[in-house]
Length: 418
Image 1: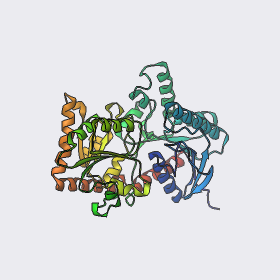
Image 2: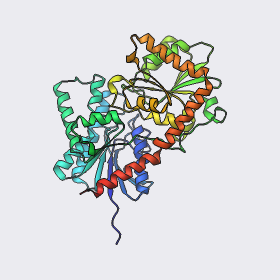
Image 3: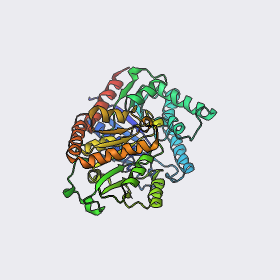
Image 4: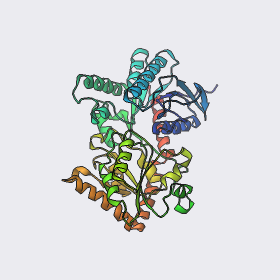
């Protein structure tokens, strides 16, 4: 008789049809592994990343993946207390399922909500359930970086101790880049348990689309504009001061440079308020487009923005870079050179990095951002060649099949190791 396929459980707060970035990448990987012969299960919440509510079944098999959704509080991301309640209720549901539900050959925890791997470590301690971690970001380091908790408070020491313990207990950890790997190594995790796999995009989901073939171009009213675009979550780990001052500089000028923000996040209101207060006519903020329109949305840009606060280097690795490369558009990063996305941009020559910390004054950093945008506006041939090189790099290194096959190899290796 044939052997049963190896059983895997992925745990994350969000899964399809949710549009959260972690939901999309987990969906891609889970469906890839199911097609590869694994028995794949996903444990997630029934809440929606933004609104808190989503009309989905508690149990379903979706493209070969067995999805188990638990009911939790559903306050969404409007308030910090509501978000914490959603996190806590999901964490407790997960811990209960891990201790009382079926065993799996391996469990893989993502990092939403924060400290979710601690539940995996508890299940291993109490039940012997092996697990790995897909480290999308690091907590409580992220909360420290934005000042939500003190760097050396008693609460921080407890949370950091639990987080580090959960990483040390994991059979393996998949990180997103060398700078994140270094932070995880500092927790006491040996190199042989660390694997770097970037997140990805699909070659047939995001690709360059000429302006005259893009139905969104006229819809959003950007014909004949040079579009500087920020797409995705405007989070607390991102910086926008230089970008907004650059938008103010270009407002009303003959170059026709327009700043387009697409998505949401805790900084959205601040950005919209800046544009309204300054009376900017060259800044537009739109909601997320459906996933099947991402190729059109990302192709609206002539240059894509990527930003990161210095304190977040190695804590978070913005996955939007790979969509930028897939769209065949130059990247302009405002953030630390000593970070994973900056190294990718510079090594492959697919854009420009402006590190504000390398300038003596904020005005000088803003001038560097303005200069980078103006240069691409004035040199369309270079803009096209840099974008084309980005597409080539994406296809060779950051395409879904390439990255998911690395996951398959790691999981098969882990499951074969006694």
